[in-house]
Length: 123
Image 1: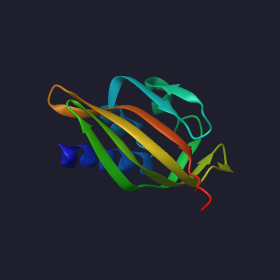
Image 2: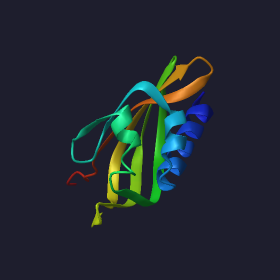
Image 3: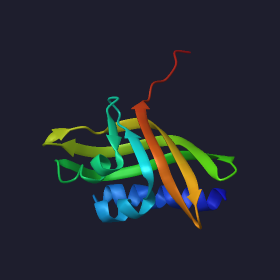
Image 4: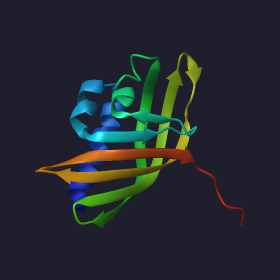
């Protein structure tokens, strides 16, 4: 199962990097919710139209993905490293990623994504 979930994460990152809403549409579960790095919440439909609204991903990579399996669900924790602009403004950065995946019939789908600040704790 972990390999299938990691494949889903890889396909998601590739679709994001390609700014490909059609590819994302096939990966997102019904009822998907996405939380952006500044705390905004997007529905499935809103997530899919981000590219039409000015989002451009020039690079998008998931680093250090760790899969935590829970039966027909899995949580992936990693780092999203992206070079991104929105409306011409740079929104690049490295963000903590939490991705929830669910098995729907025979395929894994993304139920939710949460991107947040990536901060190192003081030693």
